[in-house]
Length: 468
Image (cartoon, rainbow, N blue to C red; front, side):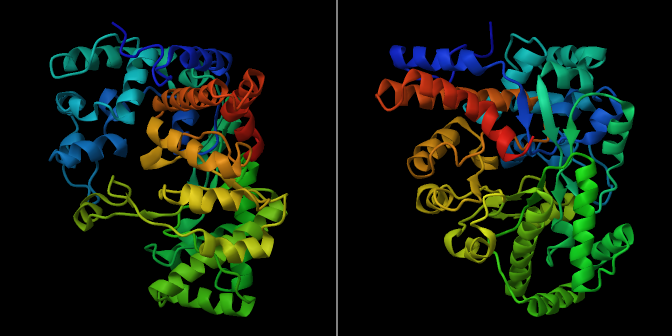
């Protein structure tokens, strides 16, 4: 028995479902463009087998372990590493059994869609995961992982990935990207420039990170001018390894356009760790505008990912470190926050700024009207908590009326879970085809127009927006 129904996520009405199915059939086999994500470039550099099913599906995936944590499962029992290096479960089978016993927690969630898609389409499984089938699942997947056709590069080809971008810190040496390039393998794995750790005054070790940035580039990063030049140098270095974008995960979307003397003074306060919370936010905002100006020089697309209240649990942060499932969406202002950057460079059509949000209330009120008029702006797809069929549908309904389709950028999966990439793209393709089918059925689109849009939403918009 198949885990997934062929017509999942399509409209219930038979006529509209038929339109959606025809649209989907026309684009289902297009290559995957994954222009922003967090897969590990080491996988593709070394091309070693994945260790075991738990290390592939459970331990590294905060979507999975946050749900289990919500029901009282200890992160140590799931093998999540402790910040102090203390003991945590290392038996993959025990971790998998615990996961399987709680798999019912994912019923009706996007995680179930992604996981079942991976189980069925990647590993050929046709039975449900539960406590009774846990060992069979584990043995079957482990056996598959031991075969050459399940190594990272083979799966990359099997998934029909045309290009995938990983995300590295500004001071990363990009050794794995260099190894990929030197190996002669033809899979396109590129990097993206993530400078938060050398920009954010609230990041631990900012001054040390900025000093390292200076050592890597030869610029005096204790001065404002040298600091900016060091960013330019590192961006150029990242471009050598295929980067087409930078990425900025700030708490807010605030931007600033200060006089350079004021920015330099604020930079010195940041290095001393003397910024107030408002000054720290202002410095991050100034750096977004500086990054936008650099994008006009070097062509990198600027991605802004604001609005996460990160590390909400002080206990989990202390025990396990950052990015362990306790990042929570919060309200985000865009109209006031982006105005300084937009008034500085927003009319430049040769600049691309892609906006993401965790605040769905901003779609029709702020984001769609902004992207619907400023030449530089494009809307990124529903992200993180809203990377779901319902979230994608809400986005299309609320953004299209003002921004249209062509001020959006298609889909990106933003994932660390390699096997979920084709699953997530399949969900996005189905949801978009269902939305387009409704427009056709209600007389708002011709079928040939819907077919062209389906192709662009799947492939063309991401290729253009991310300059791939």
